[in-house]
Amino acid sequence: MQAASLSILCPVRNVEHEIGGILQFAAEQTKGLATEFIVVDMGSSDRTVLQAVWLMKERGLHGFVIQNGASLVPEALNTAIQKSSGEYLCFLFA
Image (cartoon, rainbow, N blue to C red; front, side, top):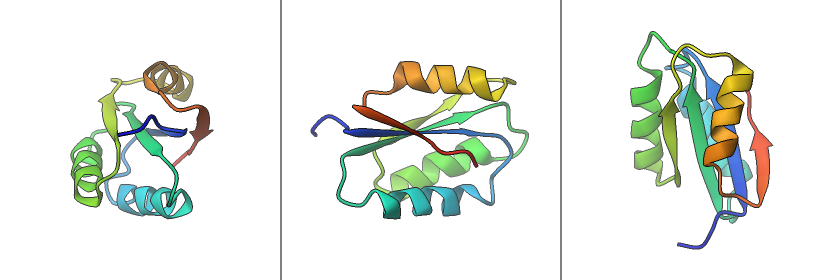
């Protein structure tokens, strides 16, 4: 697989029911681009992480889900930036 040209960084917390729509929207907007999706969970108490992993696998999206513990948005974004490999970064706030 070629290197990602775009990294979409998405800090999330307790969006179990919304994560599907979020990923679908981003995937549609980046159709045709080499894109990686980095979802950083900030200590969700629901099944956000499980849903995100399952949906990314089901939809064939390149990227990963990171459990960052109970953290704030800046900490989550720093983690995502460190893990990203795209030439460009895009921040998607759920």
